[in-house]
Length: 487
Image (cartoon, rainbow, N blue to C red; front, side):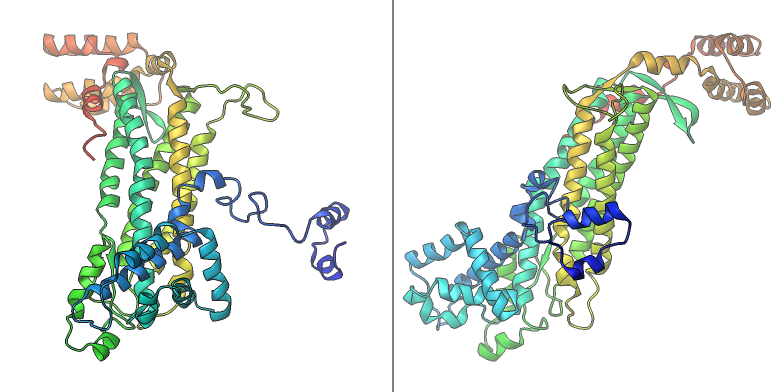
C-alpha cells in the first residue's frame, strides 16, 4: 500500500497517473532493470570491460595496490631503519591482497567507511585488520599510509585506472573502427559518388576517399589520446613533504617520491598542492572528446548516405525496424553512436573544465566529479561499439550512386571553366554560371557547349571524354594509400 506521504508527492495527472504511481514498488532491489543509469541498466553487459577500471570496487582495488606498494618501498629504503625488508612470505601475502582482492574485501572496507566517513582511512584500518596475523606487519603497522595524504593514494589510483582503461579497452575499440574504415576505404576506393557541399551537388569524389578522410582524422586523435602522459604526485598534505621531513629530515624525499611514482608507470609531478592538479586528465578528456566529435561527424555522414541509398544495411533475421512500418531498416547503430558520443562529450567537457580548478590548496569538488570518469568513457565506449556495429552492416549500392552522378552533369562546369581559364578565354566562370546555375543540365548540353569553345584539340578532347563518374581527381589513389597501421 502506498504511504500517505507518497500519495501527496505523486503528480496529480488524473486516474491513469494515480494508478501507475499506486502500482510502482517503492523499495525496488538494485538490478539492471531498476538502475538509474543505463550504463548499469540497459547497457550493463557491455560495460563489463570497464568495471575493472572505473567501478567503486576498482577504485578501492587500485588504492589498496598503492598503499601496499608504498609500504614495500619504505621497507627496502636503507634510511628507514624502523622498517626492515620483509620476508618472502610477507611479500607474497601483501601481493596476494592485491592479486586476489575481491568484492567481499571492498565491501568490508565500505563497511568501515560507514564508521569513519572517510574512504581512504577506512582502507588503512582494513589493511591493519587484514594483516593483524602477520608479526612483521604488526611491528610496523604505523608505517601503513606513512606520510601520506589521501590524495597521494587517490591520484595514483586514478592515473592507473585511466592508463589501464585507455590501453586495454578504449584504444582497441577506436583501433577497430579505424581498421574497418580503412578496409572500406580500400574496397570502395574506385566507387565514384557525388559530393554534396552545403547539401547541394558538388565535385565528385569516391566513397572510399570519404572513408579515408575518417581514418586520417581518427588516427591523429588516436595518437593524441595515446600520447597524454598521465601525472602522479606523492608529496603529502600540501605538496612540500612537511611530514616526511619531520620524521626523516636527512632523506631525499623528492627522489624517493619520484622513483615511486615512476615505478607505477606515471610521470612524476613535483609541483602540486594537496592534489595533483588534474591537468593531464583534462588533456586526456579533451583528446577523447575530439575523437568522439569526429565520430559524430562520421555517424551523421553515413546516416545521410544510407538515407540517399548509397549504402544498404545487411539484414538481421528477426530484427524489427519499426513497430508499424514493416519495410523499415533504420540506421539505428549510427544514431545510437551519435547519441552516446554526444552524452559522453558533455561529461568529458565538464571533467576537463572542472578538474583543473581547486580552491587554494584543496577542495573536495574534484572527488565526486572524478567518480564520473567511467560515465564519460562508458558512453564513449558505447558510441564506439555502435559505430563499429553499423560499419560492419554497410553494403555500398554502386547503381544508386551512379544514378545520382548521371543526373548531375552540371558538376562538369568546374573543369570546363578551369580549362578555359588556362587557355585564356575570358569570363570563363561567368559563362559557365550562366549556362548551369539553377538549371537542369544533361550530357548533350554540356558537350555542345564544349564543342563550340575555341580550345586546343587535346584540351577539348579531354573535356568531351569527361563524365561526372570519371571526374574524381586523385580520390581513388588517396583512398588506396590510407593505412590503419601507422597509428
